[in-house]
Image (cartoon, rainbow, N blue to C red; front, side):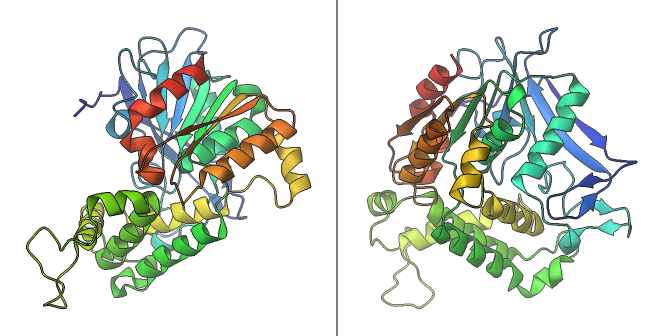
Length: 360
């Protein structure tokens, strides 16, 4: 396993103390804290920064979740570029989110945390970049929700983004929206959720684990499940033909994924970030979308993932073609893996050459 690189710097930035930060939902946040980390060093002109945007359960510590792409001789080489990660608003890894104190009540926001959008996240990141003196990025890169952020950066801050790489990302289709809804219902249906106002250490672990298990199905593929698990009984020695409580092997895997997740993530943050994923769009009709896409000035690289049924590769390819129709320099590439959507994390060796080519 690749050793995780430690950040060169990690810290917090707080803004919107005097003037609240306005959200697309019409709500506001004040103040707003962003946890960020970077690897390497900024050049004096601060023009060598690559912003890496994390997915739903990621953090500012890029080396923790993309270790095979970050390091000496790798696509994101701190000797060449300053690699910057920023934890998004709504998360539970240091930035303002449901676990933060609400200054209006002195209690944690919990279920009162407002709806945030992908574009809210990006606008907050832009405030941090201003604070750091970064007028123009070298590139912005992300997968899944991170890829949505890369797309939003390209159309909302075109002058600041010369290269944008979005992996396994496009507006979510109806099936994706349906599965996101079920995940949130699993959390809300847990009696321990208490309207989002559960005590610290007493979150709805049953509902959150079930939500993560449902999500894990969308992150993988039928091919992978058939290869790995088939119809075999759970490897712990269970026999589902003899006991109602016994499971097939694939069920044991899903239960395990849910159980390990509840120890590291917050249920309310899951609700907030999955909602941000659902509401991401680049225009509500074809004409509006074409106008928005045409704002991009970056070299756009959209990477699809074979057997990804959360963000099917044909939908990512279609978005790349619509960028091209809007006269944007965009290209489509694809990695072939049975891992499905998780392929951008599970097979970095397939992704690396595409990222290197896009950055060059």
